[in-house]
Image (cartoon, helix red, strand yellow):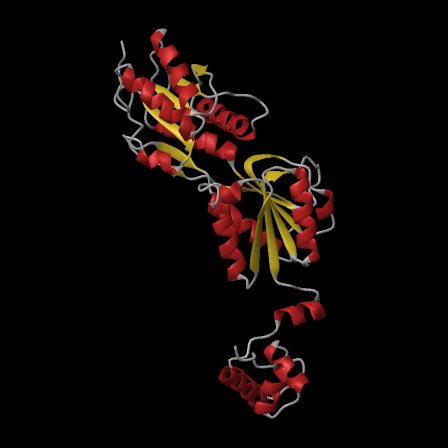
Length: 341
C-alpha cells in the first residue's frame, strides 16, 4: 500500500512554526510576511527532509491558477514534421513551470467544441490554438474571453485581440530570391507550384520572391503550374522540359514539389546544380535526403511553438501578429549560371 504524501501541517510541525508560516515560506512570501531567515530555513529543511510536494489541485482551487496550458490543433499533433511546434510549446511550458495538455480535432468542429469544453472544465489557464497550415481562422466561440495565442494561424480582425505567431513567409521568399541572385542568376528563373491566391504560404512566398528579384533588377521568367505534391510536380516539369523549356533556376514552393522536379530533370538529362539550380521551402527531412541535398528555406515550427507559449505567459505582451524568421538551409542544389546556348 503506497505511503501517504507528507502534508503542509507535518512540514510546519517539524519546523516548529504555524501552518500559515510554512505556507508563506513555500509560496515565497517570507519577505512581505516578515518571516525571519532562521524560520524560513527551518521550513525549507523540513520540506526537503519530508520530500514535501505541494498539492497543486488544492492550490489551484484557492488561487484559480492551475499552471496548465492547452494546445488545441487540427492535425499538427499527428504530423511528424509540424509536430516540432508541439515540442517548442512543451519546452517553453516546462521552462515556466507549466503543464501542456495536447488535443487534436482533425478539423471536426464537433470534436473541437467538446475538447475545448472539457479543457475549460479543467480550468486550464490559457490556450494555444494551432493550425497545420498557415491560414486565417475564426476563433471558436468557447475561447472568447480566454487567454489565447494563435499558432501558425491568424484572424482577419483589424485590431487583433490575441497573440498570433506565424512564419515570415514574405521574408522567406525574399531570402530565396537573394540565394538565386547571389549565385549570379538573373534570367531563366521559373517558379514551380500552384500560385492560387487562397494558399497563404504560396501567396506570401511568391510576393517575397518577386520583391527580392525586382530589387536586383530581375524577375521570374515564368511559372510551371502544379499541385504541391511530387507526382503532379514531376508531370508538370516533365511536360515543360519536353516542350523545349530550358530553365536555369527552379524555385519550388515546397520540398515535395522539388522532389518531383528533381526526378523530371534527371530523366531529361539535366544535372542539379550544374545545369539547373533548384531551391525550395519548408526544409523537411526530404530536403537533406535528396541528392544533391536541397537548399531550402526552413519553417521554424519549434521556435513558433516556443514563442506562442512565451507570449501567453508574458503579462506585458501586447496582442498582435509575430512573424518568426525562416532561416536558409544552404546545401548543394544551387550553383552558378551556365551557358545553355
